[in-house]
Image (cartoon, rainbow, N blue to C red; front, top):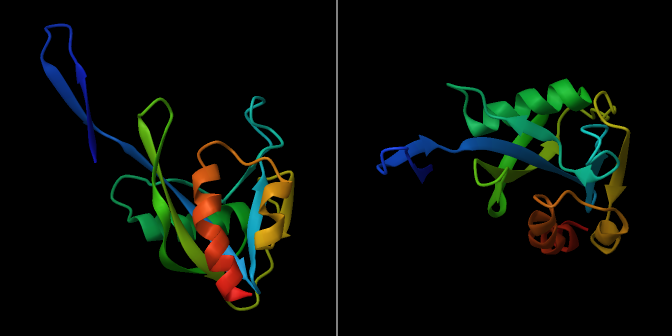
Length: 147
């Protein structure tokens, strides 16, 4: 995905959007939500675990790495959940994938203030980051099906 802006000479400049991936880890009809610790303006808000895709890394490989780093879990990545969500003033795009835990791993809040497992009826009990909010709506029917 590319974005355009105008250079000082008035010519369009093209640059690639940064891709951020998130994991909607689903287990027993519930999804894992993680409370942010930083930066201060979003501390205490909830998100799906994940992070930036590094150069040369696939989106799914980035998610596997991020889940191991943030939660000390191994995951299997499934289908996309929802569409692309533009973020960071249009410089980044969030892509969320369904995921499941492997080997009975239990998530640990290594980089988050708290973790919560939420059913479809509980999704609105936390304050989601703005970029994650559209994904929550796309996730609701999946949780009802998985329950």
